[in-house]
Structure formats: C-alpha cells, structure tokens
Length: 383
Image (tube, rainbow, N blue to C red; front, side, top):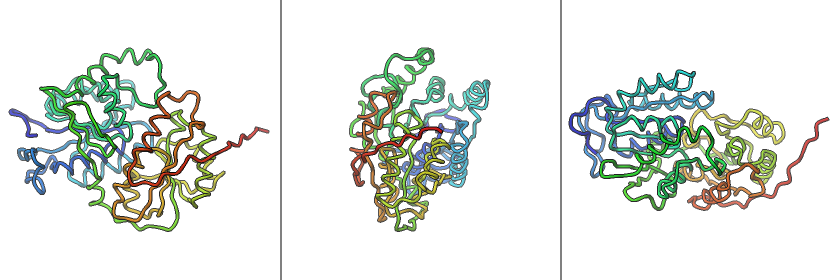
C-alpha cells in the first residue's frame, strides 16, 4: 500500500484505548515493516510483498484515547513509552476527562483524520472510534486485535449485523443505542470492503473465514518475542484473572470457588489480575484463598515473555489462551484453560455468552484443556 498522490501529514493513524490494542498495533507495524514517523531510512528488511516502502517519513502515529480507569491508564503509559522507544510518535488524548473532552479531542484530530491515508483501530465496537470513522477519508482501514472481541466483530460483519459486544444482553436497543445508531451503521458500512476501500484484520485469533474482500493477516507476536525474553521459568503455576464477573457474565461466588479449586489442584500461588477486576474481588482472592495478587504494569504477553513465569499458566476462556502460546513459543511453559460451567453464568448474562466462551476455549491452539470444575459457592451470612 503506497501513500496516495498529494498526501501530506502522517499516512497512518492508529487509535487505541487499551494496552493490548497498543501492543497489537506495534505487532502490526513490525509485521508490515512500517517505519517510525520520523525515520526517513528504508524500512528494515524491506516491505512485504505488495507493500511499497513509501516516501521518507511514511510511518505510524499512535493516538491514545485515554480512559479514566487508573490501572488501564498506567499500562497505557508504559506501552506508550515502549512505542516511543521504538521511534513512533505517540499522541496522548485526555478523551474522557470531562463533558467537553470528546468535542475537543475530535476537533483536534479532525485535520489529521482528513489527511491520513490509513486508519488502524483496536476496537471497532468503540463509539469513539466509530465517530472518528465518520470523519476520515482514509481508503485503507485496519482492525487489530482487541482480544476475543475480534472474532465476534468479523462474524457480525459477515452477517451484516449491527456491531454489538458479545457480552451485552440481547433484546431491544436502549435509548443511547438508538441515538447512536446512524453513526454505528455508518461505521459498519465503512468497515465493509468496497472498490473504494480496503479492510484488513490483523489477528492472533482463530478466524477461519471473513467477509468477502477482508484481508486476514496473522499476528504471531514476533515483535514481542524479538524484544523480550526468553523468560526464566519457575516450577510453580500462575493463574490469569478475568473480568467476566465485572462484565456481569459470571457469578462472583462461583468464580471465587472455581479459582480456589484450581489453585489448590495445580499449586498456583500467584494471580495476575485483569486490569478491570474490582479491588473488592481481588481482596477476597488474597484473603480467602491466599493468592499473591499481581497487578501487571504491561499486557500479560509482555510480562510472561519477560519472566519469571510459572511452568503452567492457568486461565479461564479469554484472549490469553490464544496469545500466550504464541508469545511463549519455544519455551516449556504450558497454558491450561478451564471451561466455564454454564451454571456459573448470571441471569443477566447475554444469551450468546455460553456459546461464545465455549468457542474461545474450543478454538484455542497449543493449550491443555481442563474440564470445568464443580463448585459449590459458600454463602456467608452477615452477623
């Protein structure tokens, strides 16, 4: 893809809202031998087949649409530093700092959006990103992984459905959904390939088929493996946390008892918290089960690759059952995934939850499958 005639300004803009999205943009840039924005030298190793090297200065500018969550912001700051270390320009936007913030952010980005020839996004479900897509004239659109949501995005795009996150409860759209519907519909049309627009999905997820015209590119975490490790491996087991309780999918008492059972069975002592897990839940995991709670300052793929890491990593269905085997290829670390028992699901869980979670586990490669553990939640009666 060569920049189009008359182009001025950054040819590629990437919009990210989470640390994993930023990591996967770096992986995408590495896989495409994309040069930093200020680097006028030829791309290292040459561009991939069919990809022109571009003029001096052609590269990537990352735009961080910062969330308010402190842990996510901390990880994003660290990832932004890594991106700068690689030579990329990073633009940090306080996109949610107040009522006027979205208008100021969009107004400030509009000139760049109109000039960019390629847009990379980490979350096509994001209303922020969907709104930005209505402004851009870019003819090349790229979606990088935002975890397992990428699988659902490709499936919904193929079926021509409105873009809705898999864990959202089914039924009629709410007032905010109806208000935003025209923007969402416009984003879906723009993310559908046409004679005027190309769409690429860069993913480590098991996507076997895609809508006609969508180009699938594999993410094998080659940048992560080149940049970090190999890790020192310990004898014990580590457990990976999930935000399934926080998103209302899994009952908290069932989750705690499942973690207790797994930790005891496999000798796990450390629990790597998901950035969205609540402080209350993590406190209970520490005090009631005795796990050492680790709050990673980087995405788990980088933490595991840096080490030290347990010889076994335990996880429930989540993105890491697909990404960790790739990041840790060549090591002796075993990734084991435990199924979610349908009995653990809450009454408010989306009707799609059971099938989606089963699919996440069933399609994972190079992992050890563990049957769902049988748990009986302990109900504590207040005195």
